[in-house]
Length: 178
Image 1: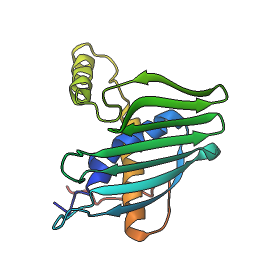
Image 2: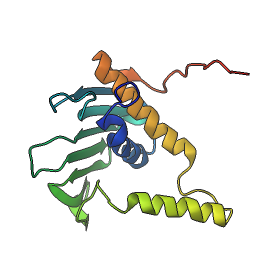
Image 3: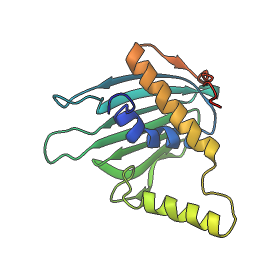
Image 4: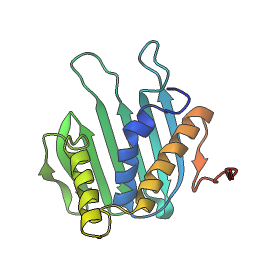
């Protein structure tokens, strides 16, 4: 499993990287991350914390922990800071969606969970099925998904080297067979 999985960074934190990219609306330029294995005997990190700097100076930070004491299922936190305010989401401790801007602090939405949505996968699949059946655009362009994965992979590299990683990542050319 460790040969191809990077634990929390690619199984869970990819959703936070996706949201941060969407909230900021600009390309990420660098990421610094730390990851840990907290479960004895585990092969891949189950905790990652990272900070992303975007074009224009916005900063996003996130932390995902999957192995916590019994009774505490997980911890996800994401925060985006820019010149026009701050957005913060934390699960499961704080379900309100909190926005701080020049008008002050507000919590315009409240959810049972905010970053952990059980119906998300079914909703995504239904959107793809609809796009195929109706010959319509898919709900999320592949470039957005690739960008979220690229940022997560860069976070993994940073956690392995202990240094910030610049984006976009350099693509390695794979040899073609045949």
